[in-house]
Image (cartoon, rainbow over all chains, first blue to last red):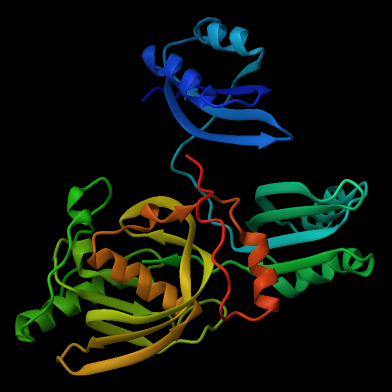
Length: 174
Length: 184
């Protein structure tokens, strides 16, 4: 397989059928997909896809032009260095929730970074109501410190009224 | 003793349903020893099921005594013709598989089970298992029915936060949620 990877980022108003339209246009021209991730963020369709094949950026843009124009979407194409089959397995999960305010993610991730925590996956969301929004943050990653040490790093947040849970992830292999 | 070859996806034989063991002869004992040697050779393998090495007999081995943080467990178990007779509670947890290299995902499993089986000599045994060990038994028994964890994997965004909330309220009788939120 070609190692000529590009990261293709596509954003637009969400509607059924976008993934089918996009991946169909790519597949018809022999473009290979690597790892991909589609998320709905605030009602927006977002997807990032590793793509590889003969098609250069101009060709990729041409292939997707009909879908993008019909749906008023934004497209980025960036050359990347990438390898498959190199997944890392997380060993700790950190979940955080509390009344929404500026800086929760920054504070949590700064504390984790100080301890050398490698974030593999991060999602954050606003729950609750418009009047009382609740911020929810979920992180999984690789910690070199113990759960207790990480909890200590996050203790100032807890003192500020934010709920913090640090749990080990014991991956079952069988 | 020998380390046996592990069948890997997309090998269709992993979908095959295994047959019960009926004879506990020397050949069975030798096979169980090979299966155990193969489990120990597998990177970080906690359990293994006979069909993973292409032997479609209802035999699994699990050993949950070596986790980083100790979990409730019954030590090294060889389970022949295992049957889960009771399930309770649900929670997601991360799983991987010798037959599915380079992939781990979240799977929802019962948190407490009762299991009856035969040991390697054909003597009946019964266990009550919880948490990680219950997960191990369910993962391996799935192999006997031709089911892989990737058939049950749920989105990484599913329910992991809520799990903690449930645990605070007691692990028993938790509601099963989010299983329809898998993403393609």
